[in-house]
Each structure stands twice: as C-alpha cells, then as structure tokens.
Amino acid sequence: MRRLPPVIPAHRLLLAVPLLVALAGPFFVPDELTRGVAFSGAGPLGTDFVGRDTWHQVLLGGRSLVLVALLATAGAYLVGVPWGVAAAMTHRRVLDELLMRPLDLLLAVPSLLLLILLATVAPRGAWSLAPIVMLINLPDVARVSRAAALEIAARPALEAMRLQGESRRRIAVRYVGRSMLRTLAADLGTRLTGALYLVAAASFLGIGVPPDAADWAVMVDRNRAGLFLQPWAVVVPALLIVALSVGLNLTFDRALRRGGRP
Image 1 (cartoon, rainbow, N blue to C red):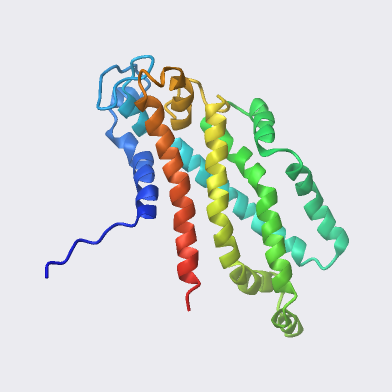
Image 2 (image 1 turned 180 degrees about the vertical axis):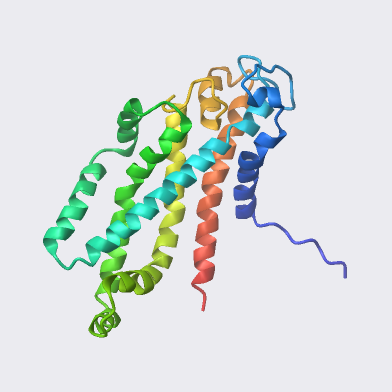
C-alpha cells in the first residue's frame, strides 16, 4: 500500500506559520521599504489606507512583536525565579515579607493600566516595551516560583541535604531548581501568551511605537476604519496574532501532557 505523507498537527501549523512570517518576513521585503522610504504597490493583499503594500507591511510587522515578547518573558523568569526561590528558602517570615510585599503592590494595579503609566514616561520605541512587560510579569513569575519552591523545601530530602552540609546555593540550584522545571514549563506558555497580549495591546493603543510603524497590532488599529473596503490589512495581521497565541498555548499543553505519560 502507498504510504500517505505525514500530516502536520494543527497546533504546530498555528505556531510555525506566524513565527516564520515574523522572523523571516523582513528578509523578503525590498531594501527601500526597510529603510523607511515610501513604497506603493498593489501586492497580493492590496494596499493599506495610505497606499503601502499590505503584504510587505505584514512581513515587516511581526518581528518586533515576537522578539519583544520573548525578551520580556525571558527577563521575567531570569529575575522572578531566583526571587521566588530566595523568598521560599529564607525560613524567616520577615525576609519573606520584605521580598514579596513590593511585588504584591504591583499586582494590585491592573496590567494594562500599569503598562500605560510606565510607557508614558519611557523612551518611545518598540524595544522600550520589553522592560515594562517584564516588570508587569515579574510578580506572577515570582509568586509561582515561591509557591513551587515552598512545597519542595518542605521535603525530607532537602533536610537531609542540609544535614550533609550542602550549601543553600547548591540546594537551590541542583534540587529545588530542577524540581520546579515542570511547574515553570506549565506557566511559561501562559506567561508568553500574556506578554504577546501586552505588547500587541500597547502597539494597538499607540504606546511605545509610532503610529506609522510596520507592526501587526498597529496595522489593525490604523486600518480598522476601512475594514469593509480593504479587509486584508486588518484580517491578516489579526489572524497571525491570534494564531501565534493559540499555537503557543496548544504546543505547551501538548508537550506537558506528553511529558506526563509514564
């Protein structure tokens, strides 16, 4: 019998297509457009409201969104995980309170409101959003890390390691850190999707990026008035953002369920 070619799972397609367009797209855009020179032409998706090629705008508009979200998420974990583990392993309530209460103050402010407040005083530009989104995600990452580390720190194995003379740093890295990997992996998909939402929301609201920037969220905002005249300038970037978010969640969910099998 003739073997059928393997079918690519839907969740991989949902993740791979927007990532490929975002990361590789700028290499297929004419040089004059990447240098900011106006370019008018009717490509396969037509033009936007000022006559720019929509397809070229789509190719250019995803890289900053994806890279800023990745950078912000990585920064939140690099700072938040050691912060949460340190709070869990202090064994002193005063130190624990000193470490975690400032983060609770950040959690009391809605993320979108905090994003707007911080972006108004930060330098204008897409990359200035990375530390802002990192700061917004930091309290959640630290709290998840602390909760996971508290459960691990109460295990008899940890007490045995202390009695053997193991240093706190060695215990935190070699035992607590390794035992937290599955919990952090489960949180990573949600956290990265949240970072994508915040970066896209900032661009949609005109925060951190100029209103004429080649950005998927900015494209949705500036072309929505002409949705029924030229829908591709709104539908295509919106679908790419949605596909990326859904693909990330499905991919991490599948990976975790597969890793949990005996």
